[in-house]
Length: 212
Length: 212
DNA sequence: CTGCTCATGGGCCTCAAGGCTCATATGATG
DNA sequence: CATCATATGAGCCTTGAGGCCCATGAGCAG
Image (cartoon, rainbow over all chains, first blue to last red):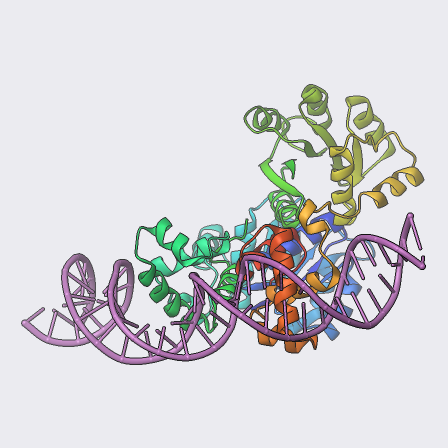
């Protein structure tokens, strides 16, 4: 689980991004602040592997803050109007990534994983950066969840949309009720749970299935 | 369920907001576009009660688009740098709400509910507007979910964090297993489900409980 | 060719889960 | 004061859920 701090004075942006990152199975937003100084303070009481920092903030430039942070967190700078000049300043201040707010969410998510893994995206050229981001495109699941078979994931997805009875699951999948129970038993072991209710919740939490 | 369309050229903002609104039990984002013309086109194939429109977009001002939309959707304008002049233009174009991107997410959510209910927020003074938003602060739950008692919600919250066994629920709540089963039976009726797995999912979907 | 995983299925057993009806105490509300 | 909603609890009964062990055929890798 990568802990992320967001510093942006536009609450709609910060809260929206926060919710979106919390939906991902491997990132968790541990704080949202609206200024550079507030970010420094928040990181003292709540450590975070990665910080998303906006440049345009009241009470001081976001980039100035980054150089103060040092090794407490890895910073990714996001800017409304991304310019080469801003990028250079961000790089000098020690930022590990630099993106326009026009990039897709999946790109930022990949960047967060890359940066949390020790990569420095800002000093790469665009081609090398995109290749690296490709590599970090998928969330890394828990060891148990990663070993789920396709059929098991299928069952979890049905569970998460409310198909919970054994006979209904069997009908939907055109297999016998016994096979459904066998798959479920295997799922319980892999996810370390003891019944289908916990399995459904875990599937939602891990991002394997969506509720509605 | 209020269907919402988002028009904003900053993908990070649009996708983040989209995810955040989808988490709410009574709003669903049915489309995300990056320009005014794209919004008009999207609304033709996918109706939406409310549209969130950014002013600053490439290929034409967002406000110009609104006047074209007519009664197909109710528009809420959001702006990075909200000015009185922009607000007046938005009002003349027929927008029902006008907000800076600095407002909290809950405010925008309340505004979406108000506008979907036929209210016109933009012509109100700030005090009257805030009063109205207060009134729309809570998501209106399904008729069944609304009649859940405190104890029943408590049980649903435990269910959603993985406390699924009757004996564990009884221990956590300091009541007998029989009472737990009685409460659950009542929950099943109110939510129109048939077992605790479906109840847990429904609780998450309705926003009564959070998974992790 | 020999394991290996995966999907399919069977049998058996135990207990938990869910359906049904009912009772009691409490606090709010008309 | 009478009534209603809520929280608590009981008994009884049926079936579904989960635990355990095992078997077979397909497909794939060494």
